[in-house]
Length: 247
Ligand code: GLP
Image (cartoon, rainbow, N blue to C red):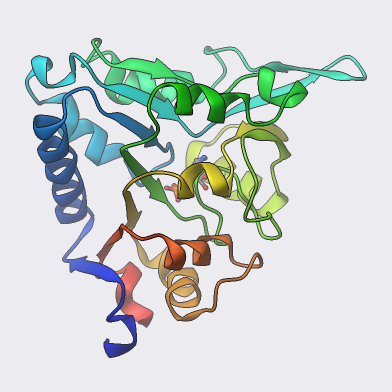
């Protein structure tokens, strides 16, 4: 894998090993800097990482802030939007509650919201006012999206804003969750994620093998948004064997 020598890549056996490695890196950082800010994803990839963090001592989470990357919204009349309710089956607030916040209620949890439809980047300002992101944990979508819903074509200077969820991601998320997926979301941008001091990318499963090959082999290009991670000065990749199978 000599062409990857500039990248910090760790390939582990399977999803459990990946989740244990991710959780122990997060715990180590939290132990060192209890008042850190994390930018965090949803989806199936981080579920077991959150489950392991849920079992850690509660005092580890007393000063931490979790900034989530995205939340769905829906049209409200002809010209405006409303955030989906936490009771919606696709709600990421609900996802975070179920996967970690109920077990670790001390975590301060923030989400992008409608302010970013009127004034894109409001959430980025909130993050900045909070001292910036110390660690961003992200995954990649099958079309190469990352840092939330930054689909192919997203500009590198994008900040938190309203987006249309592309059809392929709607289909993937519908299949994974069994519920219809809203067509819009507020998501952090590529610039939001790239501003993090450190990035940890989690890539698991055979369904990510083809896109991972394109991301790691490819030139930085808006067609495959996650290629931007090549330009991050402190980005670590945690990959399981199934996702690494085409490298
Ligand atoms: C969430 C994320 C999306 C991701 C999806 C599936 O919806 N916001 O960015 O595409 O989960 O993620 P995973 O591949 O981890 O299941």
